[in-house]
Length: 201
Image 1 (tube, rainbow, N blue to C red):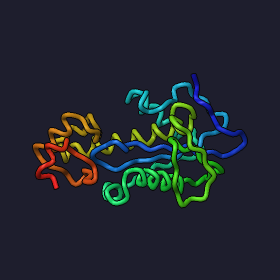
Image 2 (cartoon, rainbow, N blue to C red; image 1 turned 30 degrees about the vertical axis):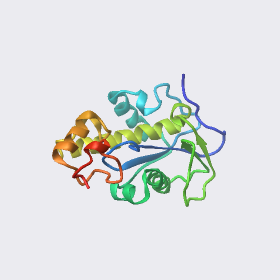
Image 3 (cartoon, one colour; image 1 turned 60 degrees about the vertical axis):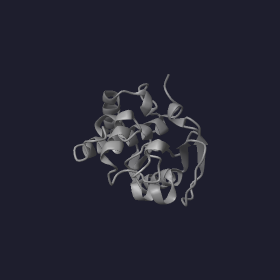
Image 4 (cartoon, rainbow, N blue to C red; image 1 turned 180 degrees about the vertical axis):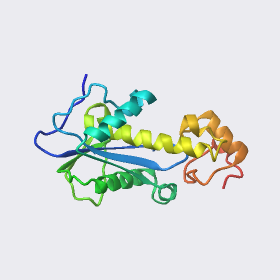
């Protein structure tokens, strides 16, 4: 079933989403996408429900057919300084600010939103499975972040980032335990179970 093209007709809406909130390493990445009101593609969906090849195909179409799109990050240092939730809001705000086409309303994935930007908005729980523009934003953000972590894996080969892209897998945690942390690890996160924390501070 195709996702909804808009919340309200005849209004420029930007769908916004982030990826990487639950990772132990790497930035949090957000995207904002404005799709044409008549846009239809039954394959657009929550990025987590799509395979890599599907996302790689869809990202080309999203960039080509959207009215505007932008991708932005909040760094590991910012995550550690202001916490992951605020860093997610910061990354989304940056993506929205980068849009050349100014939205009239924001569709935010999730149940909370905080920003200095003065746009009207709607928070939509599991919005990436409901609205095409939010799903498109989730695809752009995930492809961008996954590629970044795969590239970093060549310089930091001990953590399995080429497959786990920074999420807390067994391989990732074993790498931290054996080799310590990298500059890309979030020091404010619990990187290992409590009994293995020794020596990481």
